[in-house]
Length: 329
Length: 283
Picture 1 (cartoon, rainbow over the protein chains, first blue to last red):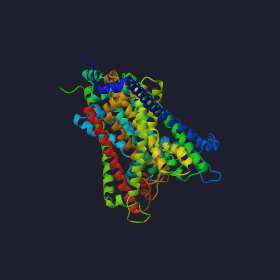
Picture 2: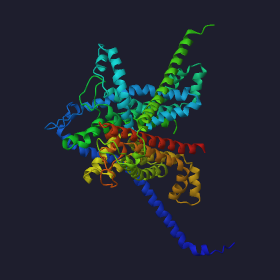
Picture 3: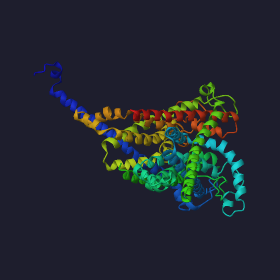
Picture 4: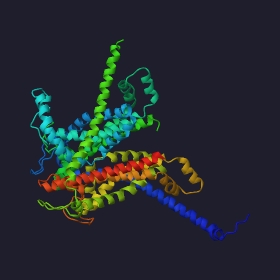
């Protein structure tokens, strides 16, 4: 059959080559656009590291390693004395207390959602917990300052102080005048903020447990708790630890909420009801008005925080990746 | 017959732990409710038309709104998403389409996951060193770039996940018809994953709409209505941060109203993203 068409006559072999080369050009361009965009992620990481090191260099040269164990923070002294011990201690203590609260509660919610909750309640509760993660951190800060702070200072702290008064160690931890601005207040807010991360990752990894394993355990007469403790948790241990580390990474770097309620005091106090500071809070509250060595010191604090969170988050990812492999993804 | 004592002990333990899990869930939901109630209670009182048409007042004044801050926030969020979303989208495309078995891909995925949870104040420090210092001043464009850096990992992650969900036979069928690779991606993969890609952009917008820390020393903030990108620009989060710690009652009231606006916007974006995402699974 002979096709009689002006269009095909017009098109001819010549245009076919042109169309193909246009396709090829488009292909190559698109490939390189996507590849360069992907590489920009590495450039951002490199940029962060380089700009932090460049910014922190004057302080590194001035203080050396003594920066790490000096407690005094006197940027207006002459010459300024800067030490990271206070903020580092605050960062670690607030995150530690936050995890102490958030891990059992987060796992409890995950167990509730996967094992106990009636089907129709699952979505609303799961959504409510995930919306907690969506609330901007400055809102948590305001809420901690105006609502939680007064409650803790007027009700909870006097109660704890009365109970533990005179008890060694614990007495010192809970001692001191109650205050709106305290390490404990910040830690409690942090706990609420990281709760959704622990819960949602735990729910995800709990779902990877093969139903057969659980059914077998129920079949030999285990109670729900026994199934969770002896089957679900051992099977998903790596994933749970990964989720916890991810939450820890978040807690270490959380800024605005903590800045509002921790009180920004560089003195290390044995009491968790006393004001303190964290690395991120110190940067947020002082950076805009700083210059020279003071600013460099703050950037050095930022570098320490970045290194710390980088390793925690990297460990978290490696653990979660191990679980993904196990699940055959 | 009485129950076996061991069995009844196990049952008691189970009931106690079930109760604790239930209490934990109630605990989590209670916080959300408490925060929303506080916000509504404090924020609704000051919410009126003036908020949207008047600029932030000078100290001590009892009239004024948040117009400049709202406009500034919208501008910076849009520019940030406008820069960050295409970059994240293309990068995610590379990871899912071109570099599936690439070594580069696994490195980028790993680094991206870390950037996803990196402290936002560090991003602020980065942009301060990379943009504010060379430009010799705080500027709206620096703030937008800081937000863009936060947007990229979020969009990259969802784009990659969503493109990987697109079944391969679709791509193979398109290739068999002679479609070049870039058109297979643009016409087939993007269309199949469209609702997922939109979800990613919405989630990223929600994430940066309330960000405060990276704006503190990049865009700073000011008291005036300004549209210039090379100057400081008023924005809602930093304005709230400054007003809420002030001694003036009216500023505090404005801060609460602003906080309510931001939270409602962010939650609406989050819920919207979930609805768009759910359409996909329902199909």
